[in-house]
Amino acid sequence: RLLIEAERLKLAYSCDPLVATNNCLVDLLPHQLEAVYDIMLPQPTIRHLMAHDAGAGKTIMCGLLHKELRLRQPDLRTLIVAPAGLVSQWTREMAVKFGEHFEEVDSTALKADNAAWLRSSSVVTSVGYARQPHVRATLAAVSWDLVIVDEAHHMAGYEDRATQAYQLGQLYPLKRGTLSWPQRRHIRRPSQLHKTAPAP
Image (cartoon, rainbow, N blue to C red):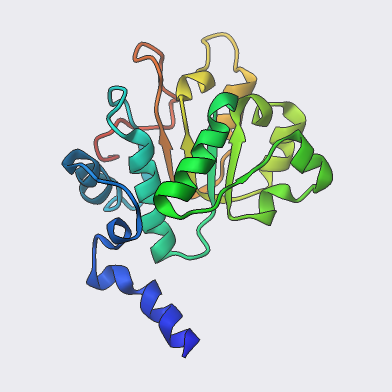
């Protein structure tokens, strides 16, 4: 009976295209639904740069996309890379608004368990920590289905050199997609990401 119920939940999206909206505690706005269901989800590979104004709900859109993909693919592996000061906020918002538990990985967690990246399928870490060469090495062997980068201008490169953060952005082996957004619009976006319009 449990196997039947699990299969029913796995296929729920085929009967309810907005299944994730019924499993979150958020008052969704039309532009958020359009971005996730009309633009992102139909793409075979999701690679978007979200450059909406502050307060437009970029975090909500990312959470909604993660929730929808998780319901369709229970073993979805998601990595969120954010500034250190926002890591706990991401963990809290994903739990409260979407019922999704994310594990924070930092130096303490990695020292305690070399396989910390694999211990959970949903992980949040800081760009300042993950960009360090020895930490990047542990990430290089781990595959993620969805990578979300908050304030992606921290991963910007330069004409004459590649920063540690830029090198971090280059090592993700993706199966499904990347979401990213800059804090300042004049920062050049990472070359591997497309704009908020559908990827070509």
